[in-house]
Image 1 (cartoon, rainbow, N blue to C red):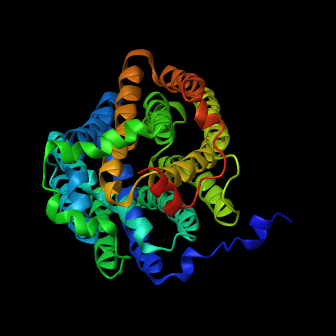
Image 2 (tube, rainbow, N blue to C red):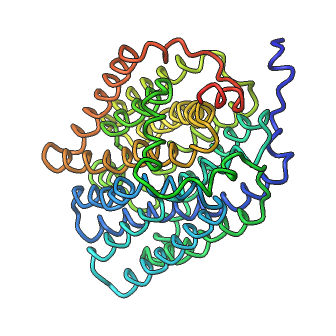
Length: 423
């Protein structure tokens, strides 16, 4: 048996108090936000019957991330990251509660889009705070295992959230009860994060000398441009998801292609996360990858192939199967990126680098949804999805040629050793 496999502890992160506290709140928050995505998509399409409007939801959530990423990342690096996390989770709860009120009183669709934009303002600080906080909550040795378990928790939440939302919408014949329940669940992570005790970090000694400035905010971007491996991984995700955003069209496929209702939409939204959850459990029980770069490239290429199969499927069962495999492959790429980015970033820059990363990753999802909705309106949903899958494969080829060091990336170094080397 491989020595790494013999030494690997698949439950290392779960033995640490900080991680258990973080994870217990994270699961409630992630399920709640996943429910919101399904409920909001259903509500918007039920009102408008327009795939383009689904794309506008993505734009509304993405624009604040683009505009505010640099100052938000700097804030995460100079303020207690737990407090940033608590504040943004509280913001989510308030905004989603207002969404429930708007829907229950038959308020304007444009008001819902405005509230989605406010959620984007919270996301711009929430994602970097979570990413930058995680390495200080667990030991260096347990960090890859913590990423695997956190990815699994996210996949479980993303699986159960749409199913629960679909069942509730089907039962109540309305989406506002889903939003009301989600508003309550979002506050959990803010509470548990404040109960953690992160390890002391070198950034604390630099807070007094690092004021808010354009130069300080840009340090994360400059580091990212120097660190080619991280830039390659983020670029791959940006363009692959930008052209392959098929999941934004789930309500269209449910209603127009498969001719099903809200309950089946919940299963369609959940299907990718079934595969992702299974893959996350496999990754948690295996030692770190020895050929991380090749695994990343092949997993994204496979994602593109599965997108094409889903786009061409006329049977809901074939579509579900393609989405399950797609989710498992996506989980591999998420796992590699979430270890690589902090491992190749000095601790005092992790908030800013994570913020720039959020522009690439989170906005690629939302702008990809807009692109898919726009193409679907002009050329139809099937063309939109299939062309997106083809585009994803072409992106993989382009990134592999442009960044040869990614093709040869082996086992990712320990987080402390790699981040010191990156300085």
